[in-house]
Length: 406
Image (cartoon, rainbow, N blue to C red; front, side, top):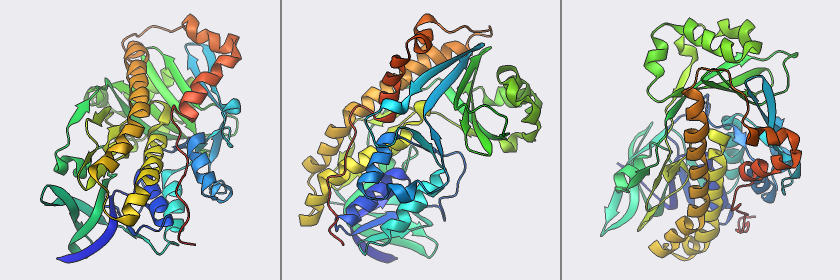
């Protein structure tokens, strides 16, 4: 079995893992990121890059280059409730450099940061390398066992970071306790072509017991059809035409292109989970991002929370890693820093799931906006509140680590 050593070994090459790897390598810490896939090119991953994440990229001096990548800029979020169109969030006043959410395929985001990270001699990325177990010695995690395209390998490390998503092998092997907060919904993802005459509307349709979300991706709509948890097989039974009819009923604008959904192969199921670890760390190990807290797709905040975790972890751990092996007390500071924003957003997501989305799904009647929602149109300044919560968050992180490589 091949053996390697790295000061920090990160399992998972998603937003949390790549951003943390970049920041630590930039600070002069020898860092190895392990990603089980051969590339980042996968559909229907989170594609929303929020203003606070764009600020992080700006603080790294990469924003101008980053915004040259293909993306769409969402400056308002809108929803159609019954026959009424409501503007829910306006990002024009958020206290960030970019007053918009950037919709960008996640593979562009990851490729961009990974390519720039490889310019640091302290950064390594191993693709097609899947972590399968942890290495423990005297009660401390000291490395991982993985399988690569070249065969099995063992990596010894002063710190192992689990950033391997909501189905994290690292957190499972570490025996960390997961609190399930509940999610009564699942989501069907699909793509439909976008015509030049289509309105510029990134938002959702709420009516007739259904919720349908459209994200403007330039020449196509990335669409999410929200269903009750466990409803997927029932929905599939009558055939794909049944799904088409349900979408046409709530979003008639798209009726003329629903034949693009030729079969259920054109639809991907996202099983929604909202959970978090009671304890994010053990001696020698830390979990961040979805491995520490799986988020609902509501608000598209998963990437933002993962990136904020990575920035906080780098800020707090770069010095302990540079001088030795971080103590458990060092690792616990990351959870202490990030637990409040995690709980706040998850509670908000659960409330929206239970009090709004689930109620819509339980009613087959035509909806009218409740009066609190109508206030967003009558008093436009209210739109700043959800824009601030979604676009910036309750505890935005800023890069405190320096560039010790160049």
